[in-house]
Image 1 (cartoon, rainbow, N blue to C red):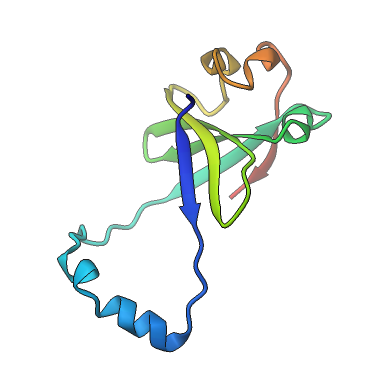
Image 2 (cartoon, rainbow, N blue to C red):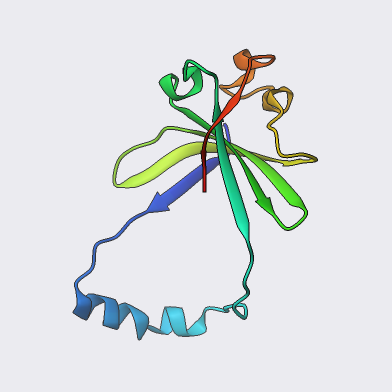
Length: 118
């Protein structure tokens, strides 16, 4: 079974948000001190967008001197569930060779171009 990310998005009234913020669960949560960092995320695909057509997204996230390559599959529903794989990377360009055993394995050796940078 592939690694899975579950993302919940909730819509709350202002009153419900205040109740949640005052809940014991959040009061007991540990929160690290805020920190500032500069993160650059670049999404990659083939020139003809073959990864996107297969429901795949490939990104490289750069923070300080660290690089992380992430592959995600499309998901849906109330609790968005999708496959997610991450690998440390030495440079700013993704390495499809790392995607062995994932839905992107068939694209090994494909030409990639950046499609969006945030």
